[in-house]
Amino acid sequence: MLTKEKNVQLSIVVPCYNEEPNIDYLFERLISVLDPLEITYEIVCVNDGSKDNTLNLLVEYHQRNPAIKVVNFSRNFGKEIALTAGIDYTTGDAVIPIDADLQDPPELIVELIAKWREGYDVVYATRRSRQGESWVKKFTAQSFYRIIQGLTSVKIPPDTGDFRLMDRKVVEALKQLPETNRFMKGLFSWVGYQQTSILYDRDPRFKGQTKWNYWKLWNFAIEGITAFSSKPLKIWSYIGILISLISFIYAGFLVIRTLILGTDVPGYASLIVAILFLGGMQLLSLGILGEYLGRIHYEVKRRPLYLVRESYGFKNQTTRSE
Ligand code: UDP
Ligand code: MG
Image 1 (cartoon, rainbow, N blue to C red):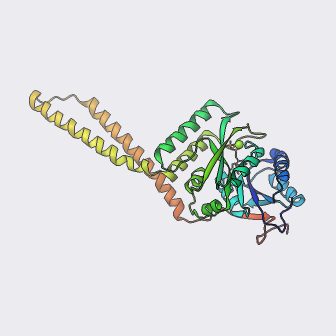
Image 2: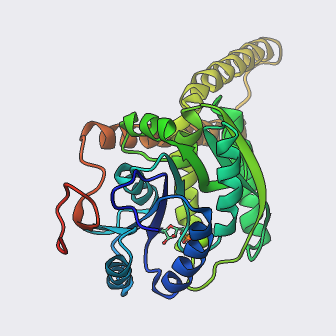
Image 3: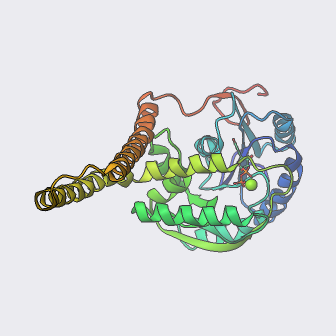
């Protein structure tokens, strides 16, 4: 179905980074789900600086089907930013971000829309199982959700990716959030609105490799925690108070002991332990300060979130093909 004159009812956002082997199958499945729904839709693909043939493939699809639109970044900006850009470019009454690797089954869109029509503003899809993922990944993911939930009051649903339906009013709310640090899972939850979830089984990646490794995931986790909680900053005052208290008591104990038993020279072990312990604590707290400071540094620069080299299929935008 074309999107020419009529208002777009549904916008799908697909961030794509080196997804060449998945594109054909992605559109085949997406379109076989969307066409029978009889709604006007657009598919906004963000090419996040792919090094393979992804862009050309996407543009070919756009030329055959104008409902497929393409935003081409000037370089790789990362998935969170690609999602933000895709969402910025949409015009639909509802927006659904979906991964290009078909880990989020497009067939679920039908259910998401049904819930939306019931009146919910956000319908997120929670994974019942994670197929094709190692126990280390599952364990670390689970710990992450537990830690972040303990540290922040924003309810971030566990095992929920970016695959969800958002009403236009939620999208407009999201667009108002100015931060450079786009921890989308957190931002999606922060805006609130009437939310509900459906369960699904997450499939393994169709083709290609995941772009995440543990180092990236670790940084992503720190990104999320620092963006949504300042507790790690505050904890140091309490640890400081606790340590001063303990040292004060210990000092009292030493004075009394010296008064009763006289001076004794040994004490090297306790000294070195105290010094190392305090040194470690200080470095750790400095590190945490650094994490926050670094992010403040990023935010104050007010750089644009992303740069678009060209786009295909949007009105009032620079385009090579139009
Ligand atoms: N992606 C992106 N930019 C990046 C990395 C990933 O746009 O720098 C896209 C990727 O093309 C895919 C989605 O984000 O559509 C999820 O990536 P991936 O499958 O690697 O992540 P995982 O499913 O393993 O969390
Ligand atoms: Mg994936």
